[in-house]
Image (cartoon, rainbow, N blue to C red; front, top):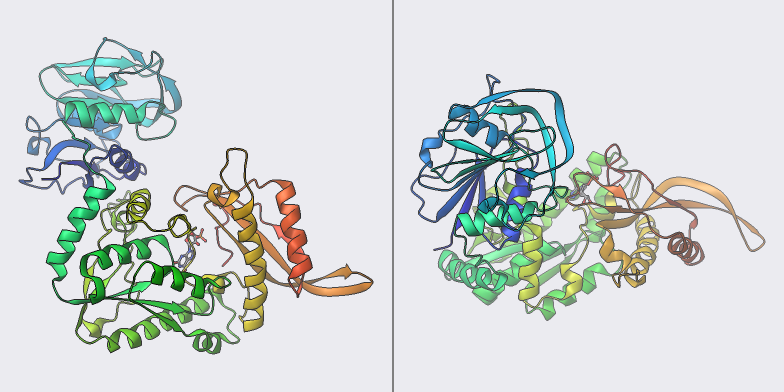
Length: 513
Ligand code: XMP
């Protein structure tokens, strides 16, 4: 049986990060809403209570009955989680006066506490809380303080309960992963036995059972998630999987042919549908960004449906949905703020059941699985690319000629990123989260040889990011930008000016539309 840690989500922005850190320890974990602790699940080996935007005194504060797992499983409370345990079991929590925010250094009150095994003296942690624990329950003891926070960490004397007011899951808690490892491995007895190979083995077995001899259709996008899902399904059910890859005319230069070839090399049963003309026709003259998105989205569903209907007896729709797409985070009103469905326009009349083999994985795990499956590195490391493709990177209306200009400019930029080696041996492509060119709806004057030109301007966009929620513009070397600008202006007919977008998200977004 696969062991798991349960992370109770009290609505903190960093709950997902706790999950990722635990998974990095090769231990399976599930993030569940604070009030959905799974009953009678013998595979659970420990419980982590997350932070929360609430104070324990707020009337709407999220409450959990600790008795569901107290005394049965080791418990770690983080920030609000620590305050909630302390408050509920007889300690005292009060407003901190000023919010305790930023770096702090731990001062250990006792030697050898298992939670801090291997920690450096004065280890740096990250604090972010408005309330603070001013008294811990009877039978608890303080195990670490910081200059400003007396009860930075505590432990129950006779129970496996720990609480920390800092955030071990964030990067600035320099030994935070070690703390989580101490909890998950030493205290809870985690075997760290999750590996891409074991995941593939069990998932292939499960898929065989789930799908049997039924037929599955799956829409490929060229991105990592749908590609890995397809390869996994292919391993489980072979020719009963039919993949559909639609060219909406808004893909990168040569992408349709290149990716189709990659898929064929991977042994996938894939149908490539070139529907460019349909999309160009429907988009002609449309300038409004949301309208363009809707047309492209609906066009995809139409083409996909038409192809899928041809596959007789298809019973399942395979999808590359991953765990972050499904985790429900709680906002301060307790309502779901993100409930993403990869399903898009799942055709209702097709009555297909969903098959999502990657639904428990984080992105980095999907990549590890892809590598283990022997997929080529350029597919695995591929940057994210928006569903509406170049359609949201051509500002204003879309024409085949504009697509051609943008594809050429984008190709020079992306190839440049892939070829430019940095000091540490990585390419610039590997160092940025996402990059692309935007075709601007303006013309400007230039001079080429003896001739005056009046042509279009493009903007280069490259960002660094961890999850696309926030992003910074990538500080690309000037020499690189100079080369790309030169190459584009010389080689792309119709462009005589190149700008570099230096806006961060927020307040800008990654895409321009
Ligand atoms: P923004 O522009 O909101 O983008 O900062 C965040 C991430 O989402 C991608 N993106 C999209 N992906 N359909 C998609 O499938 C869309 O309509 C869409 N809009 C933005 C964007 O490329 C970035 O990775």
